[in-house]
Length: 98
Length: 501
Image (cartoon, rainbow over all chains, first blue to last red; front, side, top):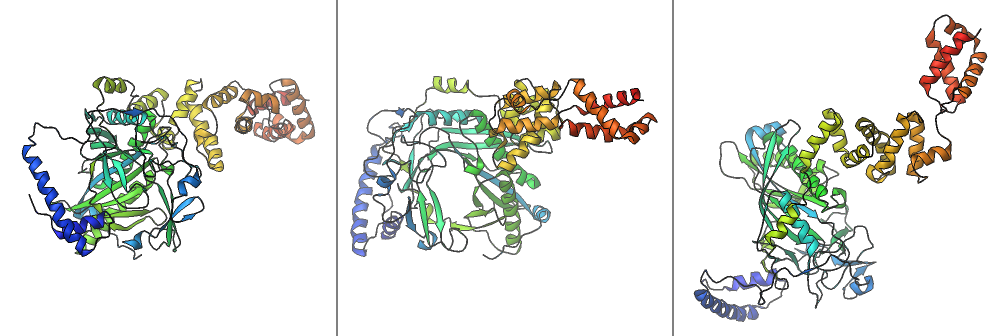
């Protein structure tokens, strides 16, 4: 099992848009390392005949009918928006951000 | 934007072998979105069809739309795919304001449909079988409008506006395997493949299939392999090409651009490129980088799909005749020449011509009206021809022409009346008083008047110069306000002239 590096943590933080300080990166690197080790232990017992689980309840095919239900009003939808222009959400320039 | 240099297309093909791949996104025409009950409707007021689930607000819980899954399975089957016995959704995590959830709900390693193929036929008759790797379900993103800057493009914009009505609309993404051996047909293969997919989804009725409304969108992957090499070149992905003609042009453009760059010793950057309809060029979008580290994981809020084999077979039984087979059958039934048939197909009029024939019209008349006057009026009105008038009305109109009640000229006036909502063709004829005067009485009176007022013409006709009758026919048609059968008038003119004096 490869170790978790500070670079990996910084990369993940960037992908998840979480602003971490250098101290936080250092402590999270250690914590994530322990978590990965714990998962590695589970992998030792997870033989190929044990199916992967993504959901704790063994259900499948839970569907809803294709029927329209009421949506939010425009005002409700925009109520949490930091900025708006008419009925649209207003967001900062996209390409310059990167 | 610096103008890219392009290599002559034939020269590019001498040096390189194009390798293609396509991702076609099909928007399903379900009544509601993929995971919530918000309406799936185009052209509504901004942000009127949203809810906590499609906006990614706390407490939103996605639920799978059964109809969307049914449509996806039918589409998979129509593409010759296997339908997975077990399939899951996954989160594709990314930060971009076109989704408020910060992830797209998509499928990763367990798509609903996989391993299909689609055989297309090029204009030359060459058949190309495109291998389908997978067709998976996902939800669409919201629509961004870029404001400020010079061009309304994303580059240089001051800010962007978002409408989330489209966010959460069900999509099926159809991914091909690499297409090799396309050679100089590559641009046509691109166009024909997308047209074939569009035709299939339309025949299945699972999508409105209007490219101009973004119901069918194509991302075209192009790479070039130097002749004699077996190493694949770096590919570019040209996004969201929204017409068949643009797909063809975009592939041709990328072949020419990459060939020029490679021949000059440059390298291709693996990147997303944007197609610009106005200039017919592509430009670089964001490079493929760590931004494409999507950290997929199974969607914990949804349970897996395990469509029963019985259900899959039931859905298979609902598949329509494959569009290519249907076209062959109809062309043969109708006896159309290739050009006539292509005209109908390319104008998207196959369905309405078929319906018009089914309503009793002859195939040639149906073709003539739909590709002629109706297409012209639709063009003027700026709407698709098939939304202008019902096939059954057109068949009624044709029947009146063939019965001699209407001349073509009168029939055009009747058509305008039908389009204006004045009723059936027969009603318009009645109300506007447009029928051809088939009673010879009024015709003979008008002819006698015309002959009497043009004695020199009468003399010429009597001398055997029957061409001179044209002047009299013209005068009679004018007097009858066009409501006469010119051939009958001619007969009568010659007859009356013979009798006169």
